[in-house]
Amino acid sequence: MFRTACMLIAALALAGCAITPMPSTAYLPPGAFFSNADNDLMAINTAAWAWGNPARTHGNLVNATLAVMAVEYLGGQLTSSPYWSWMSPLTKLDMLHARQEVRAAVGIAPDAPSQAVVDALIQFSRSPNETTAARVMTPPAFTLPPKEVVARLDNLPSLPLVGKATAMASAQQFPGSGNFMLTP
Image (tube, rainbow, N blue to C red; front, top):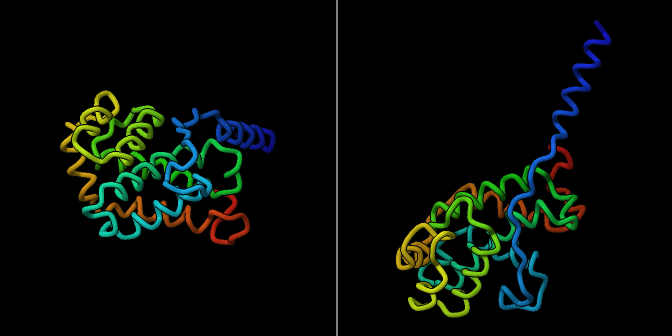
């Protein structure tokens, strides 16, 4: 009986270690957030600031675009970069869910490659107008017409899960902050 129980526990432990595919992860060029600061930290701070109170981005296409881009980028980066290995797995999972929620709210395909989304958002943040939107916010990455995507960016909704995920990432952006659990 004891041996069977040990084998069952070992099998369950191995099943918990199953390899899961890495999420689609984008890379940002230097200065993606109009700053020379580290893109990861800028993404965390931009996301936490913007999604903490969506009124901060209302009517400001650049800030809204950067807020969406930050969540898109962080969804993959926090999970795939060894730099963030100490961050809570729950926060990383919440950020992946937040990315899906933001994509649905804005009109981004759920399976779009993160790099394609980020590239389009960077271009639009540099020149937020209808011409740029028509050129970069296209299928298959975007599921809505460019004018609709811009309208949604102009009035981002309150997304509590996104606000929670970005606040948790902000609280954990430095090792040893004590605001997270090391195990799930």
